[in-house]
Length: 114
Length: 116
Image (tube, rainbow over all chains, first blue to last red; front, top):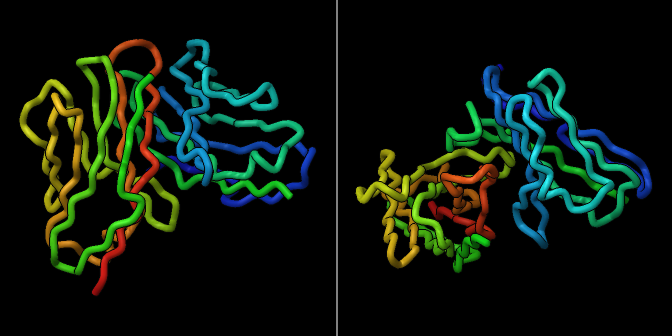
């Protein structure tokens, strides 16, 4: 596609439910990043994937968060047993490779946990 | 750990005027990249300009330019001839060139208002 796409655009869920957020990177981009944007914490790195290498999960805030990337393209961020503090905008970005410095962002998914 | 500080939570400028947004960062590394991203209400983060730390020349992109002071660890963004479409949240970001984690570290952002 022309840019990074994310779905859904908005998600409202109840506390304790699981949610899945999807990211479709720019075609041909091997590096993919997830960030979280919240009022209190600003923009935080969550996880990044580079090709077939093991992902860097150093930014995941708890074991309720996980992500996978199938076939080196689409990625899914899963949050289990959602809490109200998980409410935020989740942004995905991709770059041609991890060493190429420019990351291109998607429009984000706004998650609201009631 | 690297940190990025944007000391101006909000700024305003008159249309056609010039405004400068401030950013300072802290790092012990010598090779890195710096970025300014713009985030309008649509939430889409758009790259405005980037600077390689090894380059002494300041980056420019049309009406946008930076003042990169490596020794002072300062990276300000100047917007000339401000337009209504420049109104957005602006984020300064840092990325280390080495290592294995190419994550961006962001400042808290500056909300820019452009007055007609």
